[in-house]
Length: 102
Image 1 (cartoon, one colour):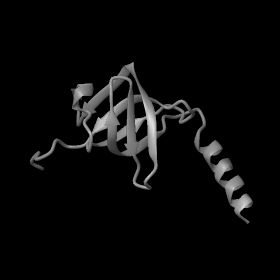
Image 2 (image 1 turned 135 degrees about the vertical axis):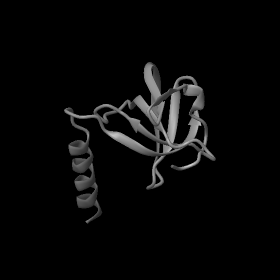
Image 3 (image 1 turned 180 degrees about the horizontal axis):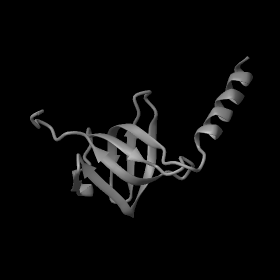
Image 4 (image 1 turned 60 degrees about the vertical axis):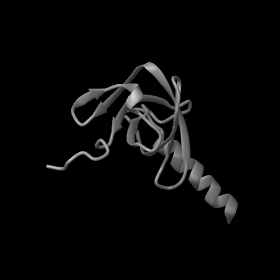
């Protein structure tokens, strides 16, 4: 039974990671350095992805700096086709802490 579930899980991941559109990861930043980012997903999985010179950061409609991506920040990260190694294309930051809602 467990083997059957494992095979189904692997097949689902393979179907999930296909070309044609950008996949995203949503979660909370656990760590970030100049070259990598770790995000904890709502399911508790911690995913690591590379940060490159092509990685962009935005907050709302405004460009932001990679330095704005801090531990504890809520993010949505575009990771291309979702295949390893994961590479952060665009990092969307949640609202700034204490920002007033309109």
